[in-house]
Length: 322
Image (cartoon, rainbow, N blue to C red; front, side):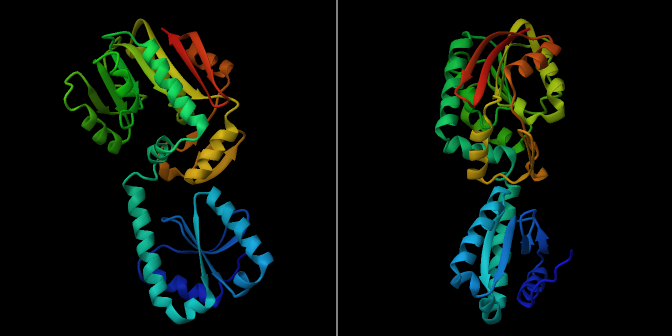
């Protein structure tokens, strides 16, 4: 049922729209009605009466409501009615500038899929740090000197730097333009390293080009393209070559939720253990897999698992041979 905004909320809405912002009123997010929302900036605005500052039960209720918005990737600003009466223009201008800065940050990649992943890499939880350490150790023990390696989903080159400790023949691919632009800066003095902007489902390499393909934490985000991407990885592998894969395990849900909340990924909905994020992220699906599910998927493309490692409750790392 439609709810009419309060007079103060309506005045602020009009002022923000005059400054060029898209503003929604009385949005139902499934938990509460929000006075105003700036969807492009992911900012909720609550225009509050005095009871929101003087009633302890109302304060506790507001904290719970704000926490729910955080889980959906929105931040909340509370503005007293009295402030609208005395400084409408100043408040509208400040909100408009804050919104513009957030939107610009989104466009620069901070709030894309890879942007959120970079935040996790910079300050991982203990479980994620254990995974990153395990991936590094696994690569170093599995890759032989001078092998030709393709790193699918290379990002800024984190795993490529590890691989370079074993071989100089490394190629990275990623579909994120910012990542592909930044990654080569780390390897400008190594002529045998290449970074290519392309999709995992259409690799621009000849059949049998690589001894090893790394597929680290890529599977969770492939949604309906898992078989396509795995098939391409197998195609560019030499006969007898190996694919090194890591992915969230079937026991990873709680650890994933903790991290998504902490970095405020905008979650659109959850289907079982599958997270569907806001479409603005690009790759907006994240899944987890049992060992049996991984074996079934990889068997379809001609891969056979020859080694497994479980990393806590968060992930599997495995070697699959063509």
